[in-house]
Image 1 (cartoon, rainbow, N blue to C red):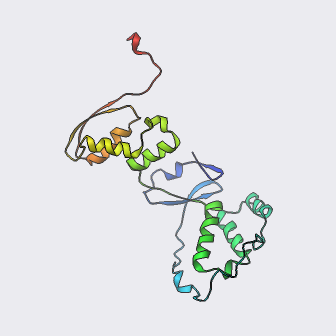
Image 2 (image 1 turned 120 degrees about the vertical axis):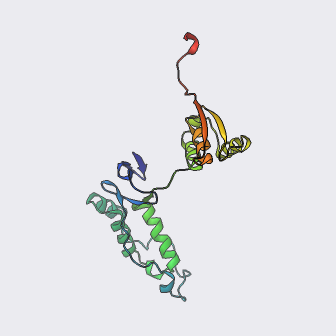
Length: 200
């Protein structure tokens, strides 16, 4: 499971789906997004004389209260329905430029209807994620340190590499990624345990 916003969602729907798939957070967890097929030519509909100079941000433009939004959530309304209701109850939305309208929609969608993009993992993304959340698991190794390690070891295609890994397989994965399938890799992974080796 992963926490998205204030909701814990199971990652089971992501299994078997191709990279690049888009999911939305629904009441029952992650659901695949369906393309509505609408043309997204926002620039063609923009009024050249319209601007945001006359708009005043005094928190009175939105007539939908937080209690109304909570009531919609209790009734099972989807995030997209809440965003549409916010747009419909905004007195200044129609006077904004197209750019400001899209910015407003994205801001509300991020809060009430977040989406999840299934991306192909890479050594860089895995290293950065672990460094932000669980740095001790990878020995507090930053991605620039890992890059320097691979460069100084001259790891490349058709290389013969001996890798000793004490950071949960991150170095071995980085070496295998850089070898690109053309590899001869001897792996030694030392796992951190609480067992004392003095008895052996």
